[in-house]
Amino acid sequence: MASKKAAGSEAKFMRGDAGVDGQATVEKADPIETEQAKAREALYRGRTWLGREALTWVLFRSNDTNPIAVLDDEPITVLFNGRLTLRAASGDITEVAVKGVNAPYAQLIRQAADRGLLVHSARLAITWQERSYEVTLDAEHFDVRAGKTPELMKDDDDEKLTERLDHVAVLGRMLDAVTARFMELRTSAKWKKTVVPELKAWMKEA
Image (cartoon, rainbow, N blue to C red; front, side):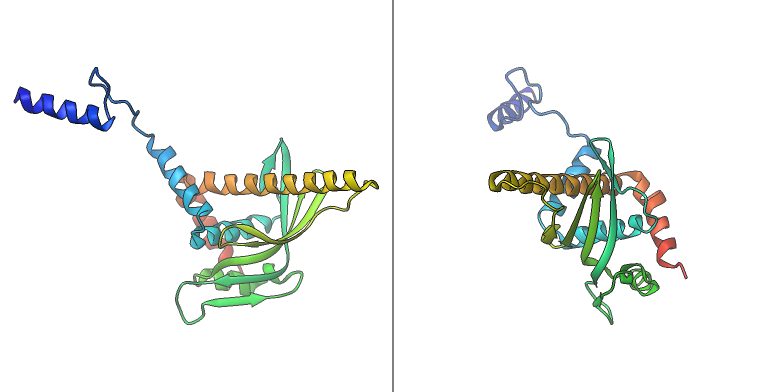
């Protein structure tokens, strides 16, 4: 019996799972952190369904014009203001596309979401501090397909380039902040207990 135990300890040591003292070399992962990491990886690797959930959540949250997330202690607000596409994996209707400034907030969109269609791409106006951006986001990789940064204020070409790069960097940070907020909720107990019921109630609004 002792020899089997010794053989097992040696095998763990050879695999790098244990040190010479027999203690584990890798701490046991926190289940919550593991779940968050899996969800985050799924989103960043282009798991479209999660990207669609994120955009649908952003649409829902933008409905009351309250901040979606916070960056450097300043609120980020989002408004859907143009073309919107929803998709579903199966069903009688697998895609719905609408145009118009107020179209994303129409009852038709909530009804489509209630039938399982989620936002696949959308035109958004994102505001932080005094900066306003217009971007088209795609759920496939949560990428910016098209965008418009704030008007450049500098006259010198080099300064314009620096200013433009700064705007792009801020946009990236804003999207990261929005994504992080969604991931925080999506991997928490609050998602099923609070957020999902709120989403369902919003979808059924007349």
